[in-house]
Image: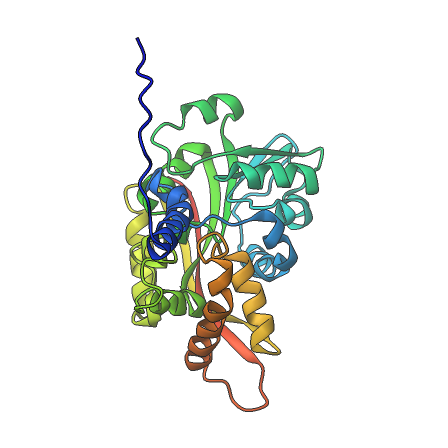
Length: 318
C-alpha cells in the first residue's frame, strides 16, 4: 500500500532562496572535482575555450620544439596526448610534429571536450577518447589501445591532485625506451588573484577556490624559487617508473591591450558563469579588474602583462 499523504514543502524567504541558489551554483562548479579528487578539478567549457586557444597553443608549441627526443618516431608507432582539450593543438601542431606515426590518441578527462574535438578537429590519424590519467585501473585503456612510444601532456598536470599516480600511469603507457613531455603551470597571476578573491567576505564560498583545484606544490604568489619548483617536480617523478631526462622551469607571459580584453578571456574560459548569478556578474567583474590591476601594476601607456612560470619535464620509461 502506498500512502496518499501529501507532504508540504518548506517555505523559504527571499534571502534563503537566494542562498540556496548560490550554494547550488557553487556545488555545480565543484561537482566535477568532488566526484573524484584524483581528477582535474577545473571544468572548462569547449565553446568558450576555442576563441582563445592560440594562447596555450603557443606555449605548447614552444615546449615541443625545444625538446630533443632521443629517438625519432616511425610509421608503426603511436603517440598519446593527455588533456587534449578541444583537439586544436592535437590536429594543428602535435600530429604534424609526430609524423610519420601510425596514429595519435588524443584524450581528455571531460567527455564534452572529447565530443567537441571529434566534431571540430577531426583527422583520419587521430582518435579522440576519454581518459583519467590518475585512474587506479589503467587496464581497460591499455587493452583498447596498447602502449605508446610518446606521451604528451600540455598544461594539465598542475591541475591533477595525485600526480604520483598520473606519472606512474604515463610510465605504464610507454613502451620500453618510450619518452614523455609534460608541460605545466608552476605559477600564474590569474590563479593568485582568484585565490585572493576567494578569501574576501563577498566571494568566499561563492566561487571555486583554485587552492582546491591546483596540485599542492603550485607556487602561489611565487614564493618559491625556480630551483625549488624543479626539485619538487623531480621529487614527484621519483618512484613512478620514469627517468627524468630534463626539467626546465622558466617564466613567460601574455600581453593585453586593456583590462577588458584580459577579463574577457579569463572570465569566459574559467568556470565562473556557472557559479556567479547574472545579477552579481558586473560586481564580480569589477572586483576582478581592481585586483588584477593591483597584481599587475602596469606602467602608464604599457600593455597589461599576465605573468606565469612553467615547468617542462622530459622523461623516459625507466
